[in-house]
Amino acid sequence: MPDKLDWDDAEEIALQLADKFPDTDPLTVRFTDLHAWVTQLEGFGGDPEGSNEGKLEAIQMAWHEEYQDRQEG
Image 1: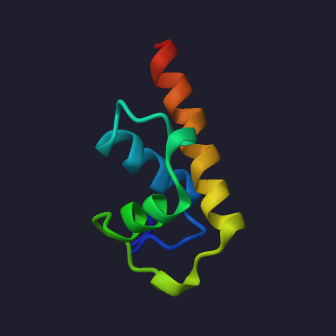
Image 2: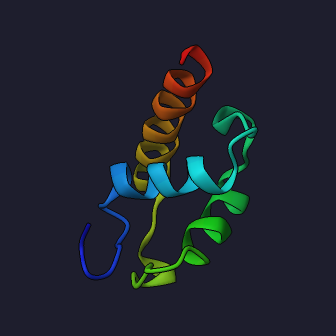
C-alpha cells in the first residue's frame, strides 16, 4: 500500500471501500458520496479537488469488481 492514497490508487481505495461498506452496491453510490467517502478514508492524502469523473469511475468500477467477487465467495 502506498504511504498516502491518491486518486490514482483505485484498486487500494476500492479494497478499503469494500471493507468499510461491505453491503453497499458501488453502482448505487452517487459520485458526490463516493468523493466524500474516499477523502475520509484513513491514509487518503490526495487533494480533494484532484478528482474528476474518470478517476471516480475507475474507483467505482474497481470497487464493483471487488463487490462482485465477495458476493460470489
